[in-house]
Image (tube, rainbow, N blue to C red; front, side):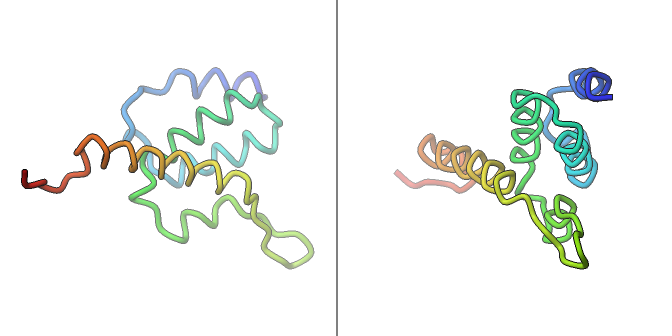
Length: 104
C-alpha cells in the first residue's frame, strides 16, 4: 500500500494549487499511518506548505486523530509544514516578491 501511495503521489503535477488542501492533508495522514519514507513525507509536507496561506483551522485539524476521546495532533508535522512556509515567505520578502509594492 505504501509503494502504491508513493507511486500515485509521484505522478502529481508540480503546480502548487492542483489539489485541495484537505486532500493533501488526508494523504499526509495515510503517509504517516503507512510509515512511508521520510523523503516522501517531506515532499508532501512541502506541497502543503506551498498552499498554506489558504488553510483554515478545520484543515489543520485533519492531521489530528482521536484517541481515548481526546483529539491528538502530530506537532512535528505541523512544525515542519509551518517552518517551510515561513522560510518561503521570508525569502519572498527578501527578494521583494511578497506581493506588495515596494517604493524605492
